[in-house]
Each structure stands twice: as C-alpha cells, then as structure tokens.
Length: 455
Image (cartoon, rainbow, N blue to C red; front, side, top):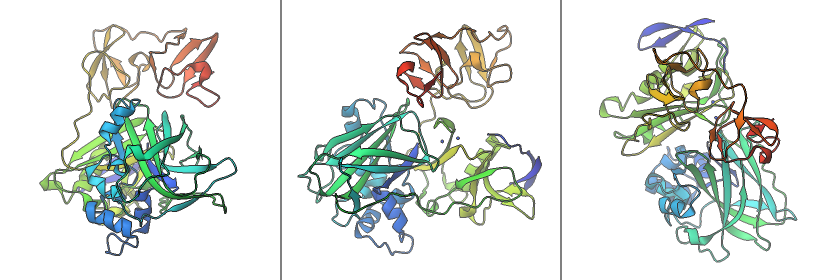
C-alpha cells in the first residue's frame, strides 16, 4: 500500500506494508511514589494535592513524574550488591541514585500509602506496569525494617530482602504480576523497595519506592492497573498506535545540554533502536520534530512518529500540537521508550573493533571478523550472528571474502559460557533446544516450559 509522508514541507512517498518491539515501567500496585505524583497531577497548574509530591516538585520539578517509567540506574556488575550500593548510595534509593530525580528521596510523612491486604500466607500480588518489558530479567523485593524511621532518607541498612523472582513473563496488558511474601507478624506502615534488573551488558535496573500499610483485614484487588487514556487507532492506515510520543509536561523539562533518547524494543524485550539527540540552543524549540524526523527516516514503512491526516491521506508530524503525535508501528507487539538525560550527553553506543560480539550494537557500514571472514552490517543490529544472517540479512560478506558459509546442519553442544540469541539451536542431554531470546549460563533442561530454551 503506497501512502504519502509529509516532512519538512516536502511530500515523500512511503511504501507501507503490514509487517512486524518491548524494560521500562513502574510499580503500579502498591503504587510507586513517582506514579502517584504523576497521576495526582497539578504540577503544571500549581495545584499539587499531595504535600509530599509538592516537596518533591519543589526540589526536582516535574522531571521525576514525567519520567515515572525510568527511575533506573546502570550497574555493569549488577550481580554484586556492593556495586549496586556504590551506584545508588544511601539517601538516593527512591531516585535510583539520580540527582535529577532527587525529589523522590524527600523524607515526608505525607507520602500517600497504599493499603496492602495480606492473605493467610502473608502474601500479596505486586503489579509492575511495563511500558517496555525487558527479558531476561530478575526481581528483588525489600521491606523497611520494623525500626525504620521515615523522618530520614532511606538507606540500604533500613531494608531487608524479603523475596525474589526470576524471569517473569509479562501478561497481555503489559503487566508483570508477582506474588510477594512478607515476613510473618509484619503489619502497619512500611516502605516496599522493588528492584527489577535486566540481564544485559549495560546492567540497566529499575528501582521503585512504594509507601504501604500492611494489614490482614479487608480485601484489595489490584484489578487492571495502569493510568492514562490509550490513543485511538487512526482509520485508513496500516500502522498501529502504541502510545503518545511525548508524555504530558515532558517538553518543559528539556533544557539546552540535555540528551533526549528514543529507544524501541521487540516483543522479547530486546532493544532494536537507540536514537540519541543532544539538545543544543538552535533546536531547543524544535527538538521533538528533529528527533521524530531522524527516527522516521530510519524506519520507513515500519514505524512512524506523528499522526494520520485523514483529509490529506498521509502520515505527518504535527508541529502545532506536539502532544497529539503518536508512536506508530506495524504491529502491537513492539514497545518504545522516550527518556531524558540531564546534563552531559551519553557516550555513544560502543561498537567494538575486530571480532563480532553478541552484546554490541552495530550500524550500517560497520565491519567485523567472524568465523574467519569479514562481514559488513547493512543496517542497525545487535545479537544477529553473521553466519545466521542469510543472503539478504543484515550481515553480508565483504567482497573478495568468498562465499557465505552454510549454517551448521548439526546443532553444537550447549556451553555454559557461550552467549546465545533468538533462534540459536544446541544439543543437550540427548535433545535439540532452541533459544527464544538472549541467554548465557542457563541450562536448557532447567529452563521450564516457558523459559528461554524450548525443544
């Protein structure tokens, strides 16, 4: 289906075809601080109803609220809690160590408490709403100790680890639902600290503070959490609306010198795009259109940031009503994340020299050595093994390097130290197994029915 694209005053033809992204979010039940403040609103009209949210706003502005799904920190050595504590020092836990979100660390008796009704086994169902699910990952749940004093900022010594979970699958509403067990005898006011950690090279993890009141009396059903209104699907086009491009108030938080980052993820939570824009003085008023334009040029026919203009019969970016623009994709499976990095720009994604690496990001023109031959990337890629690419895949043999080697007919034995990505096949204990996402060190016969390895 051929449609027309309006960009920069020029009408461009766009070929649209129904083809076929998903780690960010917040604790929806019991609600995290930034989610409560964002839902309460009032920060654009000086009418914040919650005194704690007002104190947070006075310290950090609206930034922690509009970034509710990215209270996160990168810890490369994420299995080492000493490294985690060093990255997120005492007094900064509720903001995941971020100075720009420090308002979430404010000590206040006015933080809204969510009543959590425990069952006979001292359990409740935690709901984490994932705007961009990430797998593989794992979970840790901490509870403030009985002698915790909320008049001071939260420290690691105020917490005790009460439960963990492995690689949980997201449900159809993009919610993670996890049963958490609380120590016997705990009732009354407390603070729940949730850590959602990705198993990836960057060590991205999400840290949320939920103020709660534990009880065994009553009945609380998390129901179908999640706020906001889903954008309506435009008529007459082939793309699916995933959500709005700009969260309300986001633009007002952007300053010269900040970096705006737009990422997309596939249905397995694997990152497929990482676009970064340094906001300089000459684009402070136009950066949304600049970022959208760069992204739209990268993804013709598969993605678009903008709106469907019914009368003009084409997609376009609405520069007059910025908050009306949506993120559109060729299916409902992928997800996206817009984030703001204050101050110094992020370092560019590392493209290693020489040998191909499964965890590295490569873009068009990058060359690597693999299986004794030289390969060149023809578009953005990560985790695609050159020998598995095929004749028209992302990796092509450089001229003069010979014919592309065939894919081995027999799967190789599984090795614990080997990195595997989607589609890799191995033999283990007399069976053939196929990986369904990135994995390393996870034995196929311990994967489970819905785990990374399937027969």
